[in-house]
Amino acid sequence: MKFFRNNQSSVSGLALAALVSVSSCFLEATPAFAKAPAKTQPAILTASAIAVADKYSADAAEQIFKEGGNAVDAAVAIAFTLAVTYPEAGNIGGGGFMTLYVDGKPYFLDYRERAPLAATKNMYLDDKGEVIKGMSLFGYRAVGVPGTVDGMWQAQRRFGKLQWKQVLAPAIHYARDGFEVSQQLQDRRDDAAKDFAGKTNFDTYFGTLKQGVNFKQPDLAAVLTRISDQGAKDFYSGKTADLIAASMRGHGLITKTDLQQYKAVWRQPIQADWNGYRVYTAPPPSSGGIGLVQLLKMKADIAPDFKDVTLNSAQYVHLIAEIEKRVFADRAQYLGDPDFYKVPVAQLTADAYLAKRAAEVNPTTPSDTKSVQPGLGTSMPEKVETTHFSVIDKWGNAVSNTYTINGYFGSGVVADRTGIVLNDEMDDFSAKPGVANMFGVVGSDANSIEPKKRPLSSMSPTILTKDGKVSLVIGTPGGSRIFTSIFQVITNIYDFNMPLADAVGAMRFHHQLLPPNTIFWEPYKPIEGELAKQIEAKGYTLKGQDFSGDIQAIKVNGDTPDAAADPRGRGVTRVIQ
Ligand code: GLY
Image 1 (cartoon, rainbow, N blue to C red):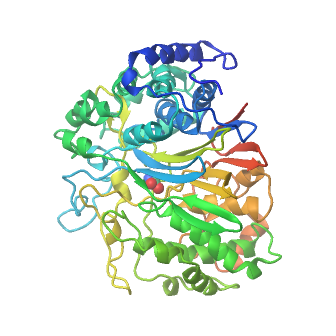
Image 2 (cartoon, rainbow, N blue to C red):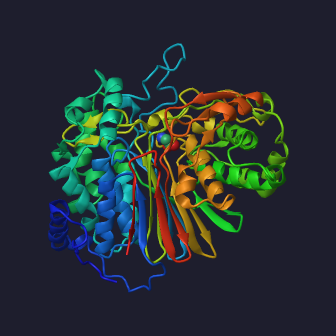
Image 3 (tube, rainbow, N blue to C red):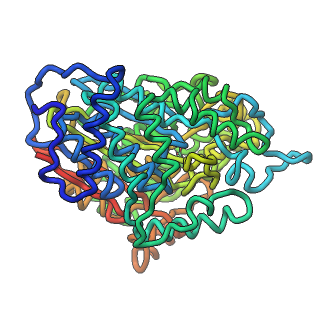
């Protein structure tokens, strides 16, 4: 293994040369963040691999691998780079989840945003108790305390091999020297700008972001350089913390104390055995890991009903919708931040419980929605614009990371003199908790707003292993569509033996209990023609959604990784020897 080697030979162009020189000079400047070279490990795979949301983050990861970094180093470099080159969802002003498999052991890092200390349960309600439209979505009061920088810091400190400055170097380069804007990024900017107009300072920072231009972010470059020099401390108690707090003063709730008190948390990932594989996925405050395990196990429980049923036929869609109905009934009632609310994880994923739920599936017609719902749950509409990347190194370590600022460009607020796009994650709380369900649990109270609480998420970065070795690294954006999308790709691969790229590119659909008996289809592969007629004949309503997900996945075949980026997005894969 070549350690700390700055090899730019296979990554061409001035851009990478510049970042390499930044990286090199940083090596001498910060002995405090230096790491002792790790012992040489034998490679167990023929190559490292990545599936990421854009080509710049792919270049960054490739460079990090060439410098001797491992999957965690590459993941942190990708995350910081996407904060610059994929500003609609990549971030340092938001939060996320990282599922890791390092040296044969699973880990999970929760760096989800938290509610500020001044947040209150009814902060988005008017004096009649009604939700004030848009208040949790746009502008300063929508912002949760960001966790991404502490998350990346903790992950890299614990498991990375390279120096901190090396993993920041690509992002600094792209912020300082610019990157070429894609049409998709401009389209997303244009859409978001309409929502932010007159409410935030978004246009001051992103008004000139147009397809084809070389877009530079000097304020963000200065922030990233300080983080590179000082670590996460700068963001949470240094100059960057001062600038964020100053931006918020008089507008939003976040103070320097909020930032100083923020900590990412290492949690036990959800673990489940399925189909000869061990599934590691996101625990609460994500609903996604529990949902994914419930979907996988219930489908296995009713395997006889699926016998001879063609993938994505009307009967297949019906059976999956029946399972999804039951998963979303649990989700609306029982899930929230485990630091505030005792989430019955073991019960919700127990084989006996899921077998009982699966036995309630009606094999021929849709179950009555009310009979499935445990109480008067809410459908909890969610933003779908998050981003995911998957990484594996040749030593067999893997990172599955999903992070978000919620909607594209988050709240639309850019912290002054920082270029940091701040999230609107407060919208993932229940602004107006519901009523008691049959188990005495107040519907959605698990996810009501409280200071320092993390809002419920659907992000489900997932890793499957077999016999202790990584088999699949997978995740996607998509709000409540996240775990139903991951589930479909997993079953495409393992139940239907599809090659990875086909499994990722195949048609997907979604049902979530409410609206009743509604199957959502996606623009990438619409449900139409004969299939649409057959599904409608079963009693379902079909509805288009304007989002298709963006799966980034790596599958290991023997000792060789294969990677697939969703054809629905601008993702890129690399297999790096
Ligand atoms: N903001 C989307 C999610 O956390 O699932």
